[in-house]
Image 1 (cartoon, rainbow, N blue to C red):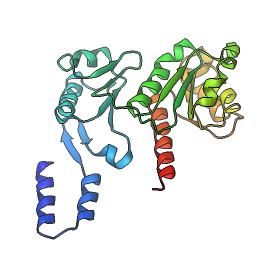
Image 2 (image 1 turned 180 degrees about the horizontal axis):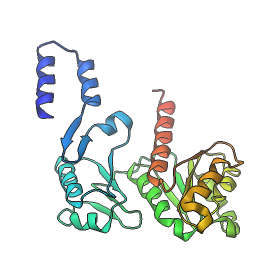
Image 3 (image 1 turned 90 degrees about the vertical axis):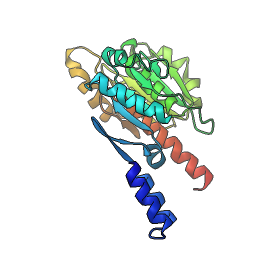
Length: 255
């Protein structure tokens, strides 16, 4: 990476390329070769979302090495689906990172909330949906969104949701996490004027087919305009909410 930067700076110094071309190269070619991949140190500048890795299935030693690199750079790195083995492998850095056990997330830092953004409300149906709901909420907060939670308000006891409709009204973006029949997404979609993002979970009895049933229910929901993520993809839902927020700021600022 350093050799590439030196060559780019030399070309700029010698007048071979202009400032705008250098900027675009820096933003679009910031990749660093690592033991297990090519890591993008300017992903946030280009996409608005910092570098993230799926830790599940990766060697704990490799994950620890990646975190050490980002800690030394003082850069943002988020790891999702961290296992006990991965956390153990981070023992040397554990005082320097943030570990969110229920969400199964480790991050190098917690950025400040961007108060200009609309709030993200994470609604979950049942207690077994909580790990995915926490992945949504923690990721949303790590990406700088004001984030609130409204848990355990599934359709088996809709009165619980009814008494908290004020929280739904105040939210800017709503993310609904539900397994079983996934019906909560349609209920909320029929009540909310905000963007609604639905996340099916793999929780349920045999006929739920590890989340396929709620996924299909959400895709076939009768409340129009609800975006549906893949099964258990809480991270993706939070990223989508963040991009909606970021785009809203661009519109309001006239960019």
